[in-house]
Length: 213
Picture 1 (tube, rainbow, N blue to C red):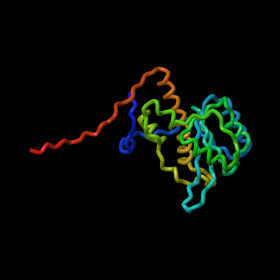
Picture 2: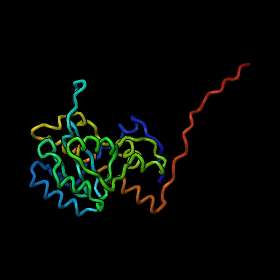
Picture 3: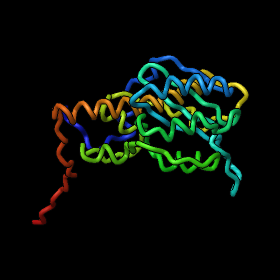
């Protein structure tokens, strides 16, 4: 497998859209949190992401509204604006036996820490993990496009994540982002183990040389 160093927005536009193929669970009560976390605590590896309602007022910031945690088969959307960041979720984030994979985790955890204090354990930042593979693009959409030739839609990114009911489009978007992190890591782990990849050579722009006569 030849891994490109970067990819253009034009290339991504022509790719087929990827959607999370598993089951999506919207978690909005303490009882549901406990049941979902009990399952996730049994997983060796999960993908994580978060969503915050956009704010267009200068100087005002909203708290993170949604925490997505995905296994290969199921994604759980924890509605933190309704439940808060309660102890079972903190236990999951602090569990060193469950590997958490995400992108821009520093930003996610900065927002989550505003809801409750915790010490996250065993986390993998994809922006750092892709570097040995020669990948220079740092966005989830571009990394996924390079590795899988498919496009992650970003149409719901600025939607209202504190809405009373999340739309199907919002749920699919949120689940896909968390699961995509897991998918990327699993593929790179396999390539690392088999060595079945090569990094594309640097692309050098051709410069026209004009010789005056």
